[in-house]
Amino acid sequence: MQNLSISCSLVCLIVLTCAAVVGIFGLCRHQISAVLVTGVMYLLAATFALFTLTIIHFKRAQDRGTRVLDGPEDGVVGGPVPKSVLKARRFITSWSLDFGWGGVTLCALASVAWILLSKIMRFSPIAALIA
Image (cartoon, rainbow, N blue to C red):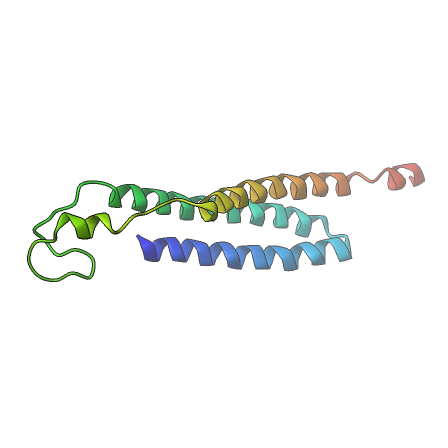
């Protein structure tokens, strides 16, 4: 599950990088389709970030469950593991998880803004006055 989470994170970063390049091109060349594609790419990045955070959430929820004391623990090979060793390993959600959810929200809002920008660029009041 950890490899899947890392893969989703890398896809998210690649999509955000490409969205920045396409968005700059769309704004500089006044290309409405490029601006619309940028909005869709931001929505795709938000989706992959959502997948990443969901995987992390369920992985941490799985680790908080009951543990088998007579099997090998992470990095421990041998007989039964004392409960004092198991209590030493804790998962605490901190600012990074909140930062991630903020990033998902920001990507979704940026997607809406880029799509609205493409709609605004399609209707130009100056062109309507000239024609």
